[in-house]
Image 1 (cartoon, helix red, strand yellow):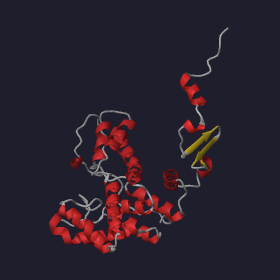
Image 2 (cartoon, helix red, strand yellow):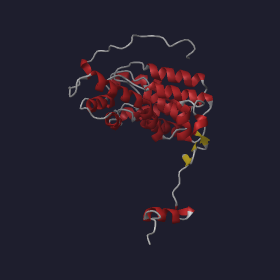
Image 3 (tube, one colour):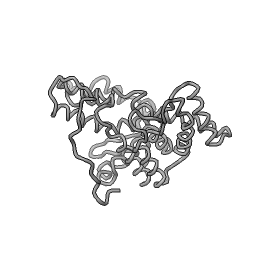
Length: 282
């Protein structure tokens, strides 16, 4: 007489564990014909939540207010791509020219994120929190800004979230700050980074250039004011840049010859010229 296998030993041990021994997740519940994201049915969210709102829900556990949802959407759009020169883009294209699958190309781009590319957001959030700690100790916002700038100057280090290799005024940062003010989500981190930017003006000669807030700094201040943890600030950049990496890898695979040597300074842009968004899109 043969007996039907009732499951692997691992499966049986899992079934036998008491509730207190089983590991837990609060993100997504899956059951037959049901998918709940933080308790909300995914099929009901489809068409009713924007992508940025769904990202906020998954990462933060609750639905964002309309203002926060719109702000996060702008943050995600702000870093969606920045041309062919960033290290992550070059990594994705270099893998793509070998004929590797799209997923491998994009993975290579993601692995190229580091402290100087995409990682400045977490560093800037920590930098700003060091200033807020000084304010809680009795300093004014101006005194705190002067103090954290002075610490960087003493170490001859550019504060994270300031300066850009190309932009003398990062248009993305300016727009994000404008929206934070309009949507009334501007908080102590944004206020501190704006004052810190003015404090840095006194050190143009020391650093050899002006150091305005860049998009990483703006994202850091805004994400901190929205309550994101340090590590999630970097994750927001990753989510934002992923479509750009996909687009560059796909273009490399479909427009260029295989196994070429890629020189980012040797390229010409041949896409659409400057154009306006349709009326009604604000």
